[in-house]
Length: 285
Length: 284
Image 1 (tube, chains in turn blue, red):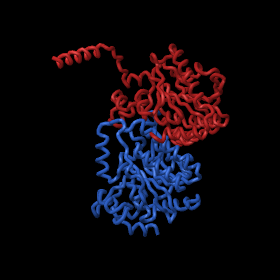
Image 2 (cartoon, helix red, strand yellow):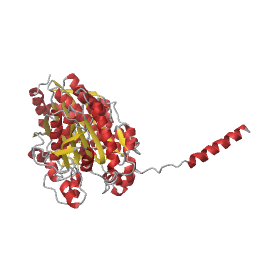
Image 3 (cartoon, chains in turn red, orange):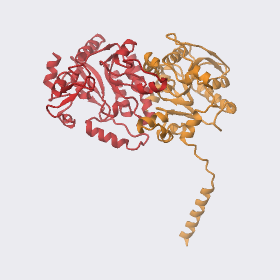
Image 4 (cartoon, one colour):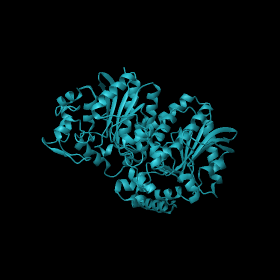
């Protein structure tokens, strides 16, 4: 049923307006993409129908926030919040503004997260989706502020929160200000929690660093996509620190389930249903 | 004629300006080296010098006892407080024991246990921050380093007693922040507080870890810069870079400041404490 719905939206509507759609790089018809995992060449249309998971090996491709929103929320239900909130360049870091500007033009995103509200099977929820395409989803003041505002607004409106995490960690160009976003977002979640509201964090590939060490790990329920890389420190840093080989599957979603830090691994096609069950069972209004 | 005179006066003023001895500005990199210095006093040195007594309490009740962090009950001017500090070692043997002040998840969980205890018994909390960062290792990941830090940030936001955090050496990244979710954060003049080590920063952004000196400058990690940014409340002056031989005056000054903090926060409504802490980070 989900596929049916998704098929219809293919190429027409991915959650954004038509204008936003135009801004995004268009893939020419008939293009093939190579799966990073199994190496198979996949027809773009097949990939799209399969919710951007490899039909051969099941590898979950990284997807932009609009696709994510289209996959999990009711059609036309998403309303963006705080899209105008953008960070400054607090350290006056050279070329940083220019870099962000270029990325804005390339991706159609204004920073590494989109926040707002939507409904899932008719149940209203606040939702945030991070993007791997904008400086690797790194958290600077714009990301921290948008997420904090979303949490505060959800607390005020008594809404649950679903947050799709995807981040390389701190936004280095914003230095200490980036670090403070961990504190800012976490304390807002504390209040949301005290108000008795549900927070589901969904860890997608990759979720690391300061995002792992703040809101990603604070969900009442923590879900993850299959094979997602999730960790605090980067594997390379750990390898250098301890000077030995890392165990197989280290920092994969499956590894985190085994060690008790993720509740469930959820396939993309099951995500909407899973979230709906959680919203329903944890008292969404 | 008149304008000529003005010129002369200006010229003279410029001369005078030149003659005023200007203290050479200590570079960010020099501060980094001082903060990491071998003779730098560590948490336990400050605790012994400032507090009248300290009873260590150990363990996280879940897994173990992290020796990179010490915590317990201390007395200062006849008041009890909970003190927790990241502890480095002074030589190879000590550092093996202390893991260079790099905490594991059980360390953050121990700290949180002691902070909750402080809250239960209405003791203010004083934290000493001195870490290159949270430990990066396989076991740390297996036991949820990210979760442990996140949990501290989350829970500290709701602690209903005053929290003071003092960066005494290195304030490295999330590993430091997890002990700095405080009502006030102070830094010793020669301490640093940063998102990452300058070496790591240079390696990530410029693919060249050797440009650390340049990174230290760009990153703005010194006490003075962070005070200007409003990230911290106070810079504790070090008349000369602190070491174990000259720390007496510094500790006396620090003790006065800590007592002042305790006095300012005494009797404050717990909810107000939580509000103020929230607002402190909310504006960042």
